[in-house]
Length: 299
Image (tube, rainbow, N blue to C red):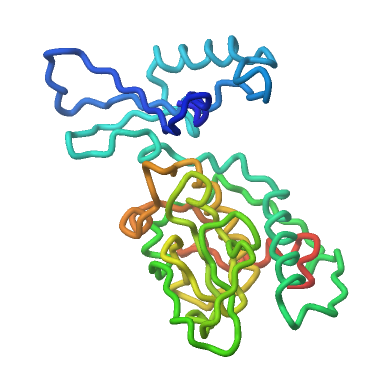
């Protein structure tokens, strides 16, 4: 249900509704309907509370009821899945991510955010004249319908964030699950950087922190509130990393205080990627695509 369904109570909760028939066993080989009923069209206003100010609810309700009656599987909204007593009983575990919502703007925003961070924190970028030009003028279609699903563990080396002890004359970035300053929230510690090569960090817990994803090109330490990802098959560069973090951010909806992105869960999760004719991830396409974006000439 919506995250702020009980916002005016004294307790913050993530609400999930389950419906059972009393005195009947759960049938075997039966697909249960799971619905992601998050966006009900209601908005929250400071003085009047949470209500249907824009008159969206009736249309949304009609669509939801139709979907439930027909038990339709709709990408980004609902899925049918066989579950047992020891299975996860929430839609986020099974629903297919809607990659069709990806827009060129999402990748452009990732580039701009990353460059803004570098300009603020990288010693080598202080005097750089940032240009809006792309590294390549060719416009490329994403063609998402041809992408292929891969398990995270087959694409990435994944570990929980680690840090060196604070006994160092210089300061280094401390990356956590913050949504600000490339995940660092502007925090530095007096410790030698634990990570000295480029990596991707993904928040693994909390409502706001889980799924916060950033590319780290500066040496850093990391809290255990993030998972650190590196490519298995090749060296991670800024172009590929910015493409990948844009995709990983699409998964944020799956997680909250009650459902974190643990290492075990992430390793088995699926990410859809452009695929080469060989069936392997097409990292060259990812790199080439980011090079067509504004400001990519600065990467």
